[in-house]
Image (cartoon, rainbow, N blue to C red; front, side, top):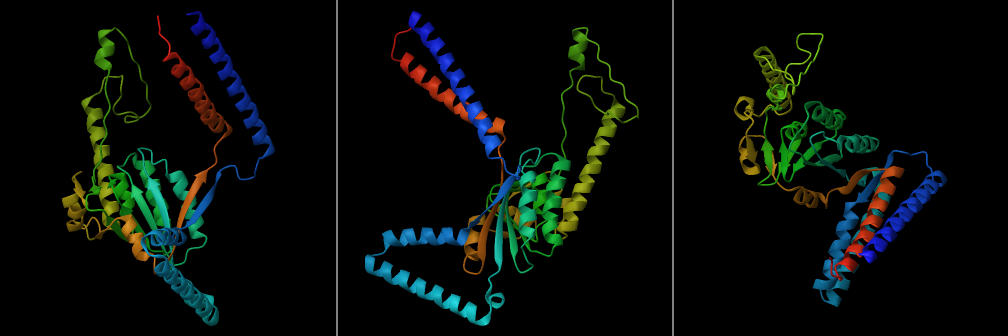
Length: 346
């Protein structure tokens, strides 16, 4: 037991020292390397180069040496001829259209909209109407106002006359489908989930529990419908009716939004809150074709220059130190537990 006490004290000192050291290093680094861009930066990946690298790696293993060299020589000759033709007739004539690939991974608050807005702004500084934007969308929906903003960000692309394609590999339901229907074209995997054109709200009520324990709850409002339903107060039928009315109004707006962006949809048939798999959604005109995002990008490879655009947020000092301290603590604690596991405990 004395060993455990001594080792515990040693562990506490070590962790304290490591955390303090990381804090000091982080503060010095932040002060010394401060940049004007405190928000983050855009990263662009040339997907054509990535696919070419993968193709060459596969060929180097699959083909025999002579065939591989012949393939490589032919590819170099073709690239040289293309460069020569481009230079001779002018860059504008031979410039390939570009496909910009963005990702949106939605939670209840549509938090990824903060990155999406920067990515779209960056693309719009360069994109032409001959280009295209592909958004790989995944979301089961969430807050109305948050997804309304996310849909508005996508609308910026269409408003510039740039074709917008939405690819749904797994799910675009409720607020996710609100975003998807902005696209000029919607693609979905065969078993992707789409639809859920409905509105839901739920909350618990603890009023009876508070009464059982003789706890009074007071809430004062100015305006008849400032608060319709509450968690702790006693709810009334009038409040419930108003709450349902507000839900219906939101549902009407949702249906109007979908109808305006996808007039080919029979909105009364699909706006029941139900969901459809990709193949079923195609029959209901909720999507335009069955395809995964990977399949679509590879199809475009020969005709377009492909670029993946991603906004990377700059981590704060607290986040950097927090991650480093967490890793250091786990490492030290792991060693301590490992040593203890080799000794009998009383």
